[in-house]
Image 1: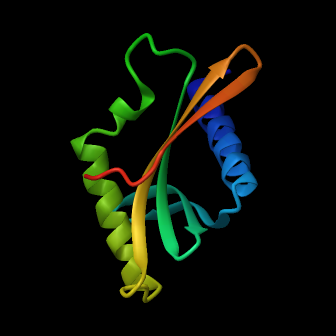
Image 2: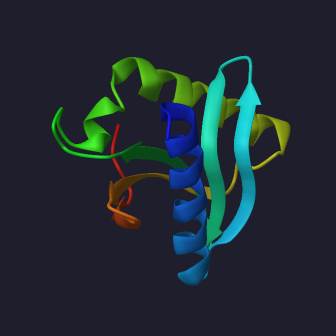
Length: 117
């Protein structure tokens, strides 16, 4: 499985996980000039902007560590554009990171809510 396939599979697993928790998936892979947001979901009154990182191992560190300053900047800009475009200025928002680790044929998920960037 190449890197792109692994990433797509990780996003699919993250989506299934969120739906089991009762989240409503509003958008996937929202792209604009400023960047991309993997999943945009509704959790109660919150609009949640989610970055999904998938790895086969922790050999090079935790998956969340790859959400560096550069990536966070683009996520914030894409989020601001999404909020502006869909007139969501008065809504509660939060940022989450979902780590997906492939272990043999299973996927292990670690959901980090309300990351403060």
